[in-house]
Length: 118
Picture 1 (cartoon, rainbow, N blue to C red):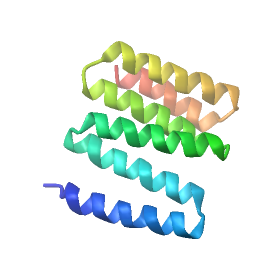
Picture 2: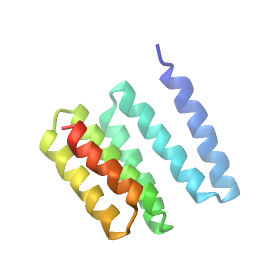
Picture 3: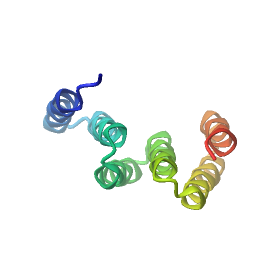
């Protein structure tokens, strides 16, 4: 059984450390991990908030792979909520952005998300 509270605490500590040293990629990635923990325990609204927060940091710093990860993660939340059309739209948006910024591996991951998750 997963200990989500312990994970959330560890990810929050990492987030604070990354913020203190000015590591924006580490900061945003730790926020994604917090979102993942919320998603796994079924706190979908909190997960979405964290993915959106991380996506904003990634966008501001032009870290495209992170943006795409957050977009796909939002799709995963919609899928868990059984909002399949919203999930599909989110995955398609992630695919479009990955094509726009020419992130080949992300394009492949988005293609798999569309096929395997809906």
